[in-house]
Amino acid sequence: MFNKTDATTAPTPAPARPERSTPSGKSSVLGADLKITGEITSAGNIEVLGDVDGTITAHGLLVGAEGKVTGIVTAETVEVKGRLDGKVASKTFSLRSTAAVAADVTYAAIVIESGATIEGRFTLKKA
Image (cartoon, rainbow, N blue to C red; front, side, top):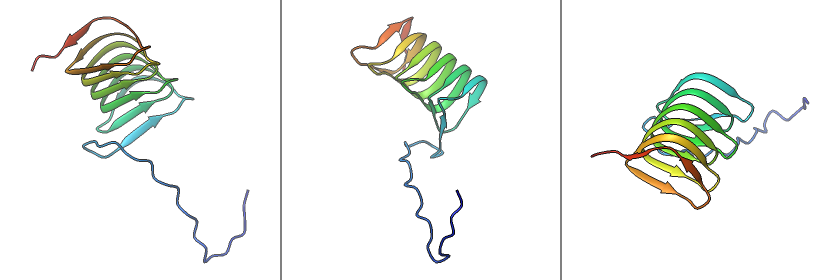
């Protein structure tokens, strides 16, 4: 676990994860082992790999293939690969082939891949 190393050898840093363009330049990942109940707010992007029950407000939201969100979502961009139930307000709403959505969605642009399952009301946001 502990190693004796030469003091002149500096450890090499891990490669940085590419970040999506956001106003704050920040991203947060909620891991697969997390279950969160409550309100989440971020000026950057949020990636949900676990289970969230509550309200999410962010610049961007990505629900991973194993992720589940239940509640109210407000974000510029929403991309769903897993499960999303509730109410969504976004400019761009993308459902990938593995997505399962049961929600009332307000959007300006929408992408639905073949294989995605959707149920609910989809309303085009007026300009």
